[in-house]
Length: 245
Image (cartoon, rainbow, N blue to C red; front, side, top):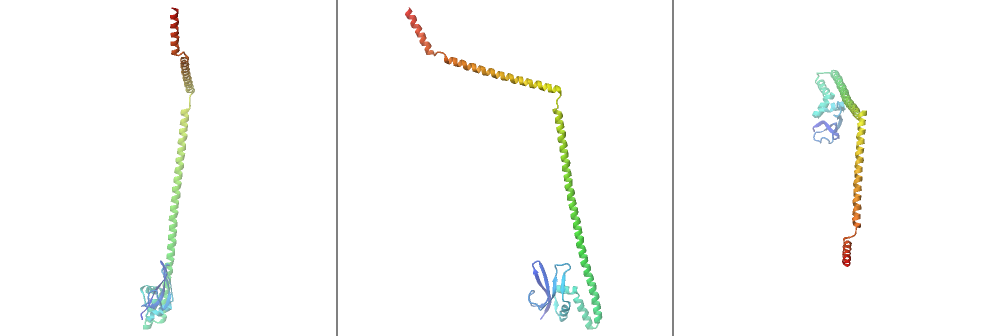
């Protein structure tokens, strides 16, 4: 049967990590497996790979076929390079000591590169954080300056308004200030107004007196003898005159 070295998916949606397994090529991706070699987490930087080096090399020598992703992982961990050196030992091109020395040299260089990459990533993160803090500080200072300028402008405007109000009050006071002559003229005008008001009151009293007189006359007219009585008196006088004749 075709044996493959492949990844078996684990984890939640959007947070996946993988097991490196040896499985039958006809089995489902997440189905049964023969042996688990390690784990692969692509969410970290650099990716976190934990693998049993000797087991992976043994299965590779037995003919297990890795998938593309697993092949990249084996190359990254040096399994493929060690497998290549062991082929050279079998063919007699290298001795085991030479192969081990080459692999040790390659492994030390690889680890140095990985450490340098991790260090560069850490430095870049720190630099990015420092730059972000500097930008935030600039923005904060700009906001503080804008607020201070706004408050200064408002204070200046208020001071200008107060000064204008004081000037207006002074002008009004000066305009309302009266000289002795003006005060005398004002007093004369007040006296004239009072005299006119007194005259008006006298006229009102005269009108009221005339109205009272008219009312009295009306009452007198009402109290006079009626016309019928006058007629009787005239008739009586006529009769008396006839008798005398």
